[in-house]
Image (cartoon, rainbow, N blue to C red; front, top):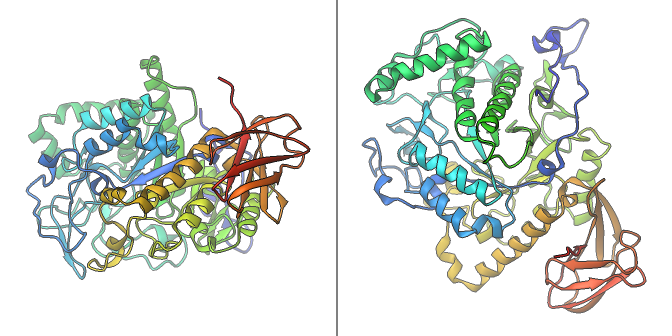
Length: 557
């Protein structure tokens, strides 16, 4: 079932009557599932997370000759599987893991101002139908998804439809019927953001085209060498016959992206460079992905967990849940066109505003986002908050001086949250030997778990994550301040248990009012100390060494 109604044809084409920019028609759509409005999503670059198989550290003849932090370092799908099996993500209260793209990447390296750079990050695709051997195999991806499912954790795959990887000596340019190698985007209006290359030597796929094209010869020759050309061609024939889409680049890419869903039951997509592709493409992607997931569930009834809709979260750079950047309510403003991406298949958008506002006091931060998400311009839709990321050089607390505060603000914020790998271990984000965004992508600092300080920080993240996971009201509920001293608030959500949180408390015995959120005699659990208490005279008393209370109804059994 398609969850979102598509904007009007005139708005979709950027046509309008009268003056001013074209504005998409906002359609009525059902509220996004509270599960996803509260979800804790763990984001990692597999190459930097954990090395489970040293034998695949340098595939395709790649060399260990990159500039600092710009080559493959050995992390892979096997390493992620091992951490899933160990319960690492369950202990953090993680609901879903999002991996940067695991498609087969360009095999060569670029050699520009930052030095030699390989596609360790996954955003330079070469073949959308195969797993890059540096990351592992298709069988290992299937195993990873199966193990995650057994642990109650969903898997989001990262989708790249805007561009191919750069051209290198080993990676030729695709036919210009498929890509445009120029001009570079000048960010003037919709066309200057979409019909252009993001940077030099990052060929832009002609996603606007409806003109049929042949397969790029390098893909056809590769599949022939691998002995799967006939199978791939037959599948393409079936797809285009079933859908009636023209054989234009955008539809090939939709087919290849949704094959992963149809084959493995992938739960959702994180969509890269969302605003640099015509929004109508994303509506088609969501439609085909939803159908693919329904087909997988029908064929694998014993493996499916539930009937939750396929989930899509988009990276619309500059979108913010509080009018940040080019945000106009639900719309992104290109200058000559405003687009409501929630109206094109997206359940959630990454909130680029949060890391810039995280220095605010608790109440200002929490009440602002709650107001926007409940009765405000983003009522009923999802946002994904983050503090640090793989390409945000203005990440909050890059020096890792306020790690405990950062964890508390993120994990108790209204909306869904993204943990960037290593946030929970204070992984360094300012590697001095690297240039540019590579500084944000150091190897996971597992060795720091030998330090007591790191173990205590991890425990803090785990308690917050488990509390959030136990009570959807934390992220999806409405925020209510109860008291200034100590700072106390409640979150309420129809059909779900409410919660009360108190911060900045003194160690030892403390009494905190819960207002009228819980009746006298209600048994509550403090998820931070693990103690169970009973409400008396509208308050609870807890004796612990901690400065925080995370209160929710005690569970029986």
